[in-house]
Structures are given as structure tokens and as C-alpha cells.
Image 1 (cartoon, rainbow, N blue to C red):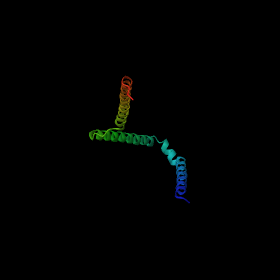
Image 2 (image 1 turned 135 degrees about the vertical axis):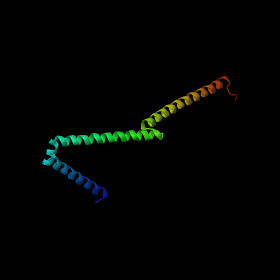
Image 3 (image 1 turned 120 degrees about the horizontal axis):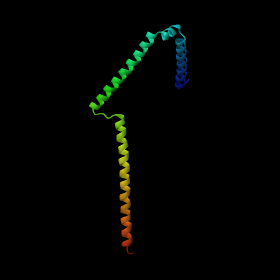
Image 4 (image 1 turned 60 degrees about the horizontal axis):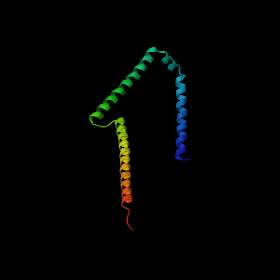
Length: 117
């Protein structure tokens, strides 16, 4: 048996065990009583709200530290990349125009002053 097939079988067994545990838990009389208890539900909501508040504070603090250390955000980097692509396109366009003008001048000189053979 290869390592990959062993890991796949272990994952499948783990998923079956997890599904069975969740099913047993949801069919449990204790869980049903808890879900009917308003105080328990209010407690769960309070925990989820607290978690959300903590996550927001952490994100604000991280953003503050990134600004303090002058580390650009993902949006700022994407904006810079977009500007760079735009400038590269402009440079290529200018280069083509200069090349075209140069070729036209050379062609005009060749017509005005044909080379003697």
C-alpha cells in the first residue's frame, strides 16, 4: 500500500468518524435541551460577537503596525503593479513611435539621397 493511498483511506475514515460524531451530537438530548435554552443561545451569541470584536481589533492593530513600519497593504501593492504595467505600456508605445519616426527619416533620406553604385 502506497503512502498516498494510506493517507486517503485515513482521511476517509476520519471524515466518517467526524460525520458520525456530529450526527450523534446533533441527535443528543442534551444538545437539544441546550439549543432550547435561551441563556445558552445568548451565551453562544455573546461568544461569537466577542470573537468577531477581537478579530476586528487584531486587524486594526496589524494595519496600524503595518502603516507605522511603512509596509504597503495588498491593495497598495496591487495599485503599484497596475501603475507599473501602465508605465511599461506607455514606454513600449513611445519606443515604437521613436523607432517608426527613425525608420521614416532613414527611408526619406534614402529616397532623397539614393546611394550611387
